[in-house]
Amino acid sequence: MIDALISTQSILHEDELRQAVDYILHAGQLAFFGLGGSSVAALDGYHTFLRTSINSEYYPDFDVQLMQAAKLTRNDCAIMISHSGENQQTLTVLNQLKNNHVPVIAITSYGRSSLAQRADVVLLSLADQVNKRSDGMYTLIAQLALIDSLFTMVAIKLSNKTEAVMSRVRRAIDETRNEL
Image (cartoon, rainbow, N blue to C red; front, side):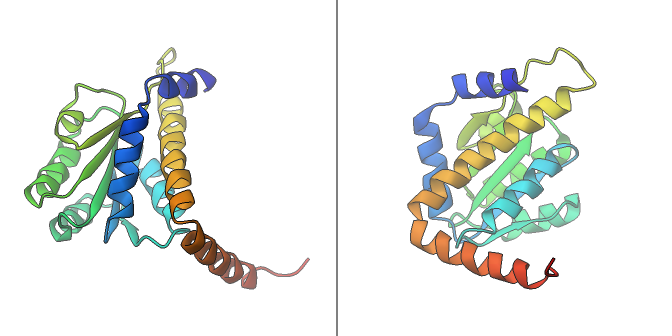
């Protein structure tokens, strides 16, 4: 896992992160897309960004993702997560997003993949796959680290708004817990 994080960090370019953060900050709607194993990272991204003042959405179903993509515009932003960057359903969603001129941030392991070639910003999540049974776990760790990095940078830029939202979220959650 440490190797996956070190490899991902070693090829991360600050200008790509800055561009991704800029797209997110100016988005009317931030949509997360991921299918299969990447749906876990997309759901985590959505869950994480709920703590900001940015409107975000995520749906695990392909058909709903396609409808979601059809509604987005150039004033929104999509974060597409795909290990291979070649899943045909993911590329169908990507085509819809590009037809609508939606800025796309790709999180993928392959810089030459179809997803990476068409995205506006590419953040590579590298994991040396030594063991095929665990490659999904290493890739997921790298994907989550990239999402957390984006969140941290956005939260800092929106610090006052983010603090207010996080406080309201914490209060709402705390009200549902029984006192021990």
